[in-house]
Length: 264
Image (cartoon, rainbow, N blue to C red; front, top):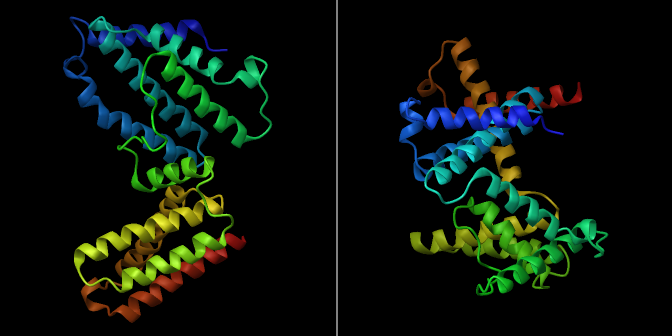
């Protein structure tokens, strides 16, 4: 269990920073100005997870927690809600949305839990007198690949999906052909979007996270590119002095080094 004294210490620190004699920077912040920091800290957590660094993960989770406390402090100063209200909200939500744990409902598979979760969310909105939200009401701030996978998951839950993986495979080939046949920049942009959406769908059938897969590939590209850069520096050569064949040879060298490293 968490140490209550440490939790109260964090709240006290934030109140002091925002207090009369507090930090000028902290006192100048608003919910809007903090948005970018919340996003940055979240990505730092993801990076720590990818690096399998417990030390970094512990540190970055603290930074995210600080952002939560910061926003709650801003709201408390305006009399809107407090950190206690935030805790009440999440505690109540987790209990309500896990009736298979805290009540007499049953769910034996992750898919059953997700279906139950959506049904409970819909009931909560109805009980609060709010209009029912359509399945495709998605947060527009999500990264595009993540948004694509989310809407496809939602469509899958109501049965609007391919029966097997052959469907998305053929669809991807079809969309690539349409991209190649595009005659204008507008058409090409539209068809490229269809290609990416189809690729995300295929990733879903492979039970892969498209965002994570692309992130891995980008990092791999960076590593190989940095190898080329390092080799050119070692040999005293400039980029402009190398043709594509020479650069490709160094790229292949980087790939071979990865393979050897993977076999160790």
